Image 1 (cartoon, protein in one colour):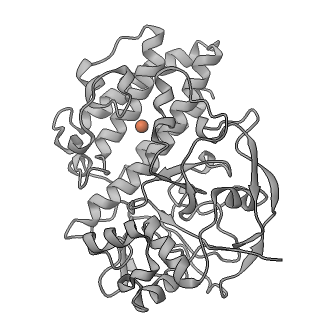
Image 2 (image 1 turned 30 degrees about the vertical axis):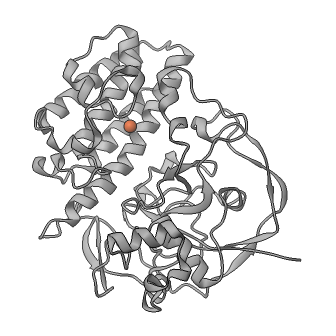
Image 3 (image 1 turned 90 degrees about the vertical axis):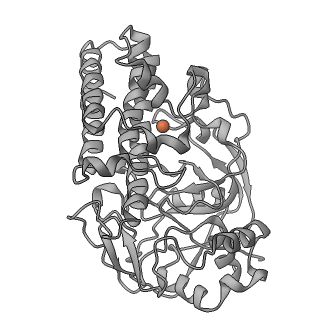
Length: 405
Ligand SMILES: [Fe+2]
């Protein structure tokens, strides 16, 4: 990590919001959604609090420390997440000025070359943190713009991922027995990917691509949302309470969906997205299969390379498999694995120990990144995690099955 890496990541954040108007950036449409303005200030606060402050740079504004701390209880009180949309001051211009202020100090620090290893580690974490927020900025603003009567696009120059008609759903045999799982080596990994350890895989096969919109439409049209036998108890309760009967951004006629490029016709060959764990699980049951475990997923994805429909492809929407296996990019994939610590897991020391470990309860692991994940931010050992009723992220799934030979 050096000054070039820092500047590249920071400028990407500004680029992805470049077509938004200041008024767009303060809106919060639900507790999970943070305003764009808040994201830009928060990732800046992260560098100010965890890199600059330990090097003696005073805070620009104590109020920002309260407003833009996300969930680090060990560094102080914070503004409630569900009320970030009420932050009127600082405005968009003030937030951009805050970014410039922190960037200037960071440039001075990075020019001083001989950063100690601990600072290097936090800097690297700060850049990966900002890349995580780049994805959140886009998924959150998608939720905001989807509510607008005009169906405003976040971006006018997105490519439409073209899809070839996928073949019938196929499976490939996975490895079984004892396998190595998790992150090891010198490259970056979050603490929740460690330590590398053994896991036991039973005989299974895993799908060669993501489930498509066309396949999901068949599931809907079969009456699946009214068949209690297909659903987990929490899932049934959720779809009935929330009146869910289709993916988040689909219209009632199942013909169009809201995308970051505005409302478009649903491509039947593209991967389905914005479905909850409950819907993914119910689909798998309806189709006679199951979701893969995160370990099955990791072993299958490991030999596939890290290319895919990611942020730089500039589609910002999932596409079709086009003969590939879609492990990386398009949509995060629900797995049947609960997000739990690996054997021997140790969170980072100090306040940054709050980064991942404290969320290891009641959430499911998702894998593989999405169409808005930064290209150099994904790994096959990467674990993200969401509550099973989450739908506003680019969440899709593939199928798996047991083998009995
Ligand atoms: Fe954060």
